[in-house]
Amino acid sequence: MSVTANSVWNNCLAFIQDNIQPQAFKTWFEPIKPIKLSDNALSIQVPSKFFYEWLEEHYVKLLKVALTKELGDTAKLVYIIKMENTYGNREPFTEKIPSSNRGNMTAQEMDVPIKSKNPELKNPFVIPGIRNIKIESQLNPNYNFDNFLEGDSNRLARSAGMAVANKPGGTSFNPLLVFGGVGLGKTHLAHAIGVEIKDKYPERTVLYISAEKFTQQYIESVKKNTRNDFIHFYQLIDVLIIDDVQFFSGKSGTQDVFFHIFNHLHQNGKQVILTSDKAPVDMQDIEQRLLSRFKWGLSAELQNPDYETRISILKNKLYRDGVEMPDDIVEYVAKHIKTNIRELEGAIISLIAQSSFNKKEVTLELAQQVVEKFVKNTKREVSIDYIQKVVSDYFEMDVATLQSKTRKRHIVQARQLAMFFAKKFTKASLASIGSQIGKRDHATVLHACKTVDNLAETDKQFRKYIEDLTKKFS
Image (cartoon, rainbow, N blue to C red; front, side, top):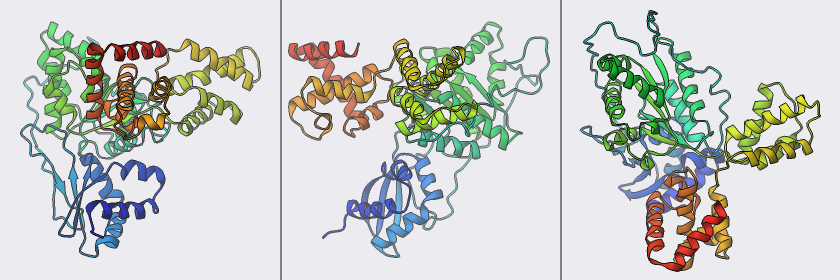
């Protein structure tokens, strides 16, 4: 039997899977693709430079043992980093060889001194008439890593956040962009990174600010003719955290000033952390030069928490609040509220409040009443799972058939409609939609959406499908 990159890597995976936790395997090894086998060197493609560094730091011995078993003592492993980035004039990073094989490779850092035209920089956070030398971080210490519970839905983002907190400005994931829907913990994670950095590096200047407030400050600086002071102030920050960066959409002046600030911070080895409700590829009305910079580092998605994570979040919340609650009630709430963490915690707070105000014991019946009211009063986001079920039922097939690799026309059309409605009714990224609907890539989802749009204009029967399904989701 001929030895191929696929066969070697599959054997390595089988060995690795037996030696690490299932969650770790899913996060760090499933996304890897074998590319080629040449001169006893296996080339594998990893999604980002962050993946490469994480594997090198945590799994290099395991990889070496697995590969040696397959290819002998002269085996080599070559990493190919998937480049979706635009690096401007910088050399794009394409391949690296593990520490056991590579020479002394170090990243070059540009050391550009800060030149200030105005020695007395005006701090946008200073109240007029009050001198303020120290820049307050605006961080919320209640948002920390201890109460940001890890699960499959957030493991990559949390791991990246911890790595940035340990070495701000010194990792390849700069900027770190955390994106996801409402109430999934983007702001919490952004604060947690900042709080951890302040704890480890008290001398560093860390600043958290919402994109909306940043924009307001910029507009004010233009009115007062202090734009340069505004820029110089932000160029002095060591770790800049901007929340809800999608708010910059359509604001060309703000985007322009942030572009210059970002470049300066990045060139000087300062850390930039951004949050957004959508992936860079889905952002509208953001200049291409800025989007390309958002992709320089790592974009990590926060997804809806799974059942086990929801249980952990609720139990942690109750423990922190010093409240005891029977397991069957916690499980009931976790089972019925799936959309996001904010709604989940809101439901448990409502339950505690109802119990204490009405002097009632917390029972399953009370939980059912509270959850029912809560679900009715909350505008719920349609899940991708629900969309797949509705579309499958409509076309009288099961979800497994919808997700299958078959190219039969009616199944392909059903799958494309599921992708179309997932993009329309959820805030999930194209990549996330693709992975959940038959493990397709984001390009397939984009093609599906365009196909549905075209057929809606030209095919009367297809237009009826869309109308019927739209009614089911509204």
